[in-house]
Image (cartoon, rainbow, N blue to C red; front, side, top):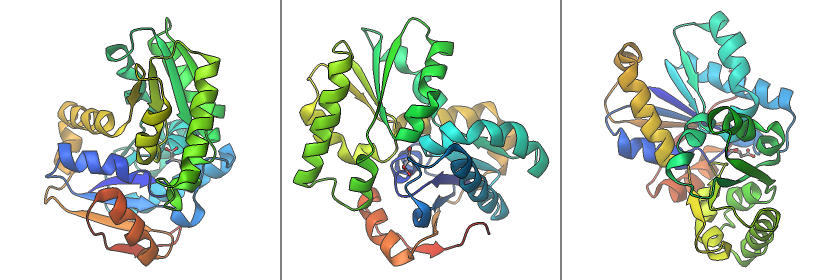
Length: 271
Ligand code: DGL
């Protein structure tokens, strides 16, 4: 199975696109809902929690794990790849979602002015800025934290009038810093659930870049380039769900994200 990890429900927006692009593969989704959100947690805590989740997915047979969470990709990916994987099992792989997102920006922007909205953790890590400076040094990026977005989504308030207040406030905030932004990256996997409202308050010429399709496309490309990993990924078209919270609660909200019913199993971390 291909492991897909997020702090909560947000990674389901990535999983949904993976299932569309690569429907034959088997997926094991893990949401650490009991400890979400990760967005305001410190570097060390996000790293510890993410490593525990990766180990749990490895233990259940995943040779490849996608961190479908920007906060975990920003704060834990590099250490896991460089320090932990060689000790745990050098044949397994953990991939993040920030690099593939930054890679595709030249196809979308004309002004070269990029806006990033994300959790405080992702923004403070400056992972997007660092990747952009490496890959596309002529572009500029404005990073803007939206701490209320994940709680709105996790509490099923994404369509409420309360969400309008915060979406308008954050969109006005980032556009006031750089009015030349023509591409807004939704740098948190929860945010596609707010995209209708984000669109409503953004100037119409600004493109919204959500990560689901980009990550699914980059996973397909990775599997093509790594046939030895591709062979290890089973293909029966199944998806299983694990959560660290109450599974009934997970099933209700996850079904809204995916548009179909879901049966999760509860696990504890570390497991
Ligand atoms: N969905 C996660 C992300 O992409 C973070 C949500 C959280 O704060 O836990 O950053």
